[in-house]
Length: 269
Image (tube, rainbow, N blue to C red; front, side, top):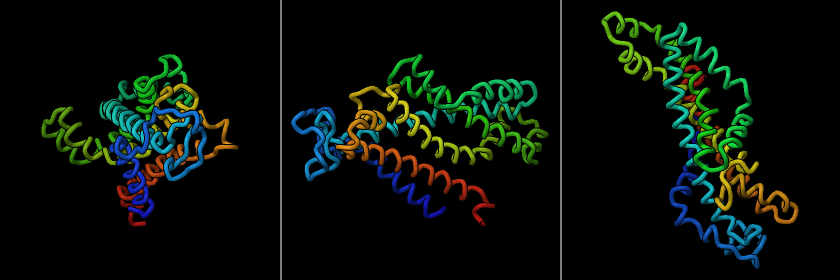
């Protein structure tokens, strides 16, 4: 893989470890308020400074990694599993099944901008982490389904699939034993890029007040609370914004590296 991919893996590993060991890494209680310490600049005690309620920004950024990665992993896992099943069925059976799924259902979801549809769903369902994950899964599965459908359409014509069919193998055996294992590589790249998109979408919806409500330390919520005081206390907005940028950048680097590694043409180039 490329050097950027290893940089992305290192950055992602730092955030994953921060999310796992947040209770031991955080230096202060994320909910503890002290109005006498409002908007302190970064110092030896408060490494990233304090926010408008005197809460430690560093500790809240660390716990925010747990929220963002939990949302991202759940959304990617559910979307990938559901999208893989639907896309594989559409590509394998073809005909009226493919026309119904890819010709109508896929296009209905793709007709709306993803974030706009997520906003509508969250506004209808209400704020909350579970509802946010559900909304992001609803808009996210189509991308995986399209990738899998294209791969299955290609792989099902290979000689070893035709040989298995000639030997009397059933449809489910052919699909899960011969086709899916050889069609899953682009899905790995899609999942890595989808992780970056899920983290960014969670932050965007939380910034708009439609994601995870306060006092949960979501990075998007932290930015929304700090934006009015950016001129006087830029550190309150800078650090959660930097965390979002680094996380998204890391998973994009990983996705690009995996695409290059899994594609022999790009690898040789």
